Image (tube, rainbow, N blue to C red; front, side, top):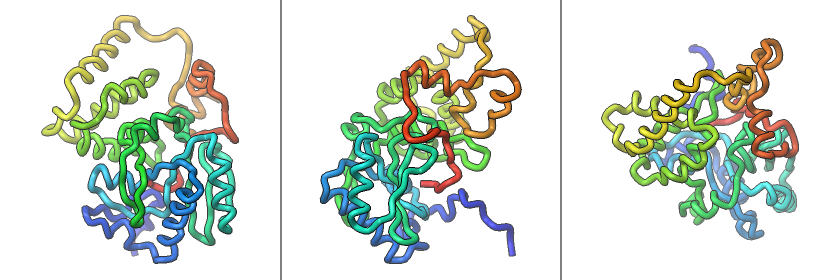
Length: 284
């Protein structure tokens, strides 16, 4: 018997749509379909994300243990009420960036922010969404730009979504709204640059899917930081990338929390909890 596979292992990757449901029985798939039907019938705006949206854009299918529905923060309570009315057990997750609905052993995630509190679901997600079909139902999918925006920050030891970012850029790079993406990453442009450099390394024959003007802009900003040198204040922004890996820096080594500083400068308020990223659940 080989070593047990880590829970965040993506499992079988396939170009066949059946791979997304091969390990799931009809009751589980029916529960997911029912959640979508309930939300639509109640008029709660939502977008399908996770593995289903990822497959739509990239053609890469994989098993997923849940269904990710993205909702506006203002609609979370209403969505929970709709599920509860159908007998689902509901809860706010303590990390504060999602809620959950359970139908027996099966569950649906209601996500309204990225784990680090940066990529909060807003009207632009819906305005830029694209049509798709999930479980035979017409739905709207999370835009590719917003998927990249949120996934780019997932850099835990046990989970790194860089491959997902790479597959998205490879598949839809020529159609991406790069101006919108640059706006999303305005405060975090180094993160975008890091992801794009990894893409260029991974796909040297596809580098041209990233506009030259984007790389020139980002690299020019890097040169400017070389001219200005290091910042005076000791800040560690690593806690925007990982909830655990930079804890010592902040608790023991005298660095200020980059996340707290970022939230203060954005005027962000914490929701129902810490909103600290916990990519240890799922791989949608």
